[in-house]
Image (cartoon, rainbow, N blue to C red):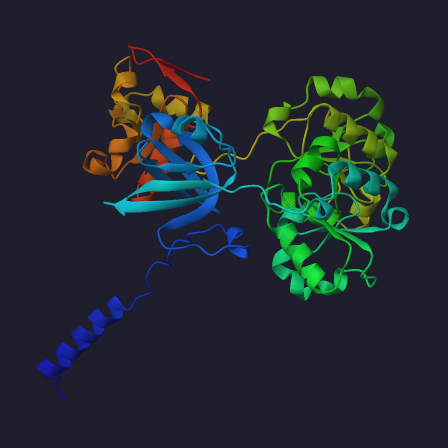
Length: 459
């Protein structure tokens, strides 16, 4: 049978319809997953974590799980709601800690989101008799559940619990509370304490409410939670948790082995550093600085006194995120996890995981020192013009970050782009904006000073 014109028309229509019916790109989440546990998000609102602030450009970043949103603001119209009153918009914005939960209401025009409300999540409010203090929890944990007659529950999701928890705590995630009520004690008059991620976290108060509805009469919340605990004490994690939270995710970690060298040499966790409990002062002299907040796991034979001594010395020195491996090296072996032999490292090294899209100073320098035609990339300077007039790297393109979206035609899409600014903050903003538009882009995350000759130094 010879196909008719109508047949061809139907085929063409089917093809077009098929193209139109192709799966659209999934909508970007408006809220971080953890926020959806307790909140719904209204249209034109975002919930996530405050990240970088660029006052010069009237911009800020917020993280929504793995993605980043760049938002503008107008000082004359934006409303910044913080728990404590601030003198002005600048002071209010500067007071927001990186990583703090925020809600943003915005308007959007020509692809640019402008924040009209930036609300910082306030501390939870509970009655005095519903709150367990840090001192109370410290005393109970020191006694242990049997002597202290308490039950301690971590309301955070399992992945956070596996990174380290308060000793004696059992993980009872608030999002899965109803499926795990069997973890609660049979005695409904027993002291039950919930904790989570700190003063603004609603998961432990939510757990308390659910427990009370089940008839538990003596329930409290350690409101200050894990952040307060880690400033005063060490946490714990199991071998399985350490593997899942750090090794399997290639998350940088410092492992300290507190056993005698002769014993540790027979077998140790990969990358472990020798940590003699009697020589902690020497170890601390070369230890990664506390402001980097290196995750630390201390290992001894059974999770005993040697590990506790090393861990507490680190806590006293201002380190947070220090944990002891429950059951020690024996538990690690019993779990059939990888063991190395030989000589332990003598010095701890910690290199934080690079921010997505960043380029190392060494790699950037190697590229920037080449002639522009030999770089294989375009250097995009997103500083303001009053900064760039003092000097730019030869061959770079200068477009202030706020102007990027209106000047995309000046940025070649067939070449790799490397963004820079004076501190790295605006360069990262530019990175996210260009990545969203399909550019192959990276950014320099550190401070750089450029002089009139085009020469530069990187901090």
